[in-house]
Length: 566
Image (cartoon, rainbow, N blue to C red):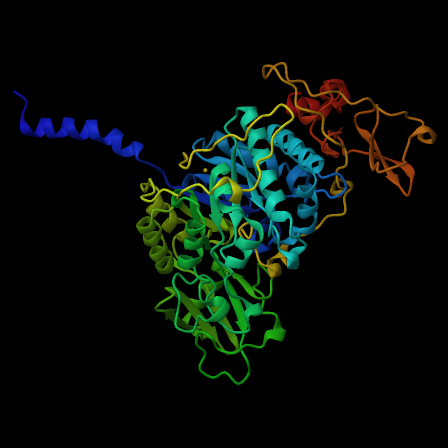
C-alpha cells in the first residue's frame, strides 16, 4: 500500500506539468544603450557590464533606417563594427545561453519621417525587410525590436496612412522571419497615450503578429508638461487632470488591453533614470505639480549622462543618500514613486521600493513581465549599496513568476473593421501567431529627446549610409548558403558610373571601394585587416564578407590573418 504522503507527492508530480502548461515564463527585458560606452569615469558602461544572468531578453540599441535606399543603417560604426559591438554582444550567448539577444531599430533620435516613408511603399518595405534578414544572419541576433516613435505622429514626421502601412510592414516582417525558420522574435516598444494608439496602431492585429509588446510606461511627465512631477506614476493622482487623467502606468497599459491586446503579451517598462526640473524661483515648498522654469529645459545635467532634464539612477542615489548634500526626499503616496528636491532642482524617479510595488502590480494583473530602459543607468558599480540594485528587484520578482493565461478572451474584430491583410504574389497568408509566447527604451525605451545628447557621432567613412539593395537570401543547408557574389565595377575611375542614385561602388580589390561624390568616383581603402561588405556598405571582418573571394586568407594582411586564425 502506498502511504498517503507518497500518494500526495505523485498527485503533485502529475499536476505540475498541467499547471506549467497554463502559463509562460515571465520576460525580463533589458535594453542596453550602446552609447553608454562614451560616458566618463564610473558612468562608462560596456557589454561586459551587462548582467545577462538576470535578463531573459537583452536588446542592443539602436540601428536605423537609411532613407536613401531603405535598408539597415548602422548608426555608430565605430562602436558597432570597428569595436565589434554587435558580435561581442551576441557572443554573450556563449556564457549566457538562456537569454535571447535582440537588436532594436529606431529610438527617439531617429525621428519618424523616414520610417513613415519606408512603410508607405511595398518595395521599400521589402528592401528593408531583406536587409534586416541578412543583418540578423550576419550578426547572429535572436530577435528584432521595433522602436519607431511613433507611427502616425505628425509631430514626429509621421503621416495619416502610417496606421495601415505600419501594420502591413509588421505582417510582412513576420512572414519573412517565419520563412527563415530560426525562431526569430519580433517585439515592439509602444506608447501608452490614447491619442498615440489611435493615430498609429491596429492593436489586435499587431499583437497577433508580435511576440511581445514593450510598454514604455515612463516619460509620462517631463519639462514639456510645465510642472514638476514623477514621470512613471503607477496610478492616477488627484492633480492628474485633462490630458494627464489617464496618463499613468495602470491606465495606460489597460488601454492596450481594452483595444484588444492579450495581457500576457504586454511587458511593463520601468525607468532606471529620473526626470528633472528647474523650479520657479518663487517656489519655496516644492510638491508634485509645482510650477517650473520651463525655459531652463529641465534640471541640471548629471556628471556622467550630461543631459538636461535627465539623471541616471546612480547619479540620483549618490546625491540623495549623502545627507550633507541637502536633498529632501519625499514619496508620492498614490503614484507610488519617490521624488527629491534641493533649491530649484526637483527629480522624480524610481527606487527599489517603488519598483517592488510595480512588480507586485504586474503579477496581480497577469502581465507578461518587466522591461527596463536602461540597464546602463542602474547602480552597476554599487555606489549606493548592492550592484545592480534596481535590476535585482526585477529579477527576484520575475524569475519564478509564471504568466497566467488571460481570463478574458478578446473577440476578433469583424472583417469590415480590420485592416486588409497583405499577401505575397503566391497568395501566402499571414501566419497566425499564438496569443501566448515562450520566453524574450525610449528605446526603447522611450529615451526622451534630451537623452540623445549623450550619443557621440563619428566622422569615419563607415558612418556613410548604405545604398546597395541586398540580394535575396539563398536556400539550402547552412553550408550551402554562400551569399550571392556582386559583380565588381570597372577599376578605371573614368569608367565608373556615378549617375542616378549610386553612392557606394565595390572594387575588385576587396580592401577598397568607391564613393560617388558630386557625381565623381573617389577611392577609399578599408582599415588593415578588414574588407568591404557590399550589402551593408561598410568595412567589416573578412569572415563577415558577402563575396566569397573576400573571405580568403590571401586578401588579409598576414599578421592579422595569423592572429585571428583566418
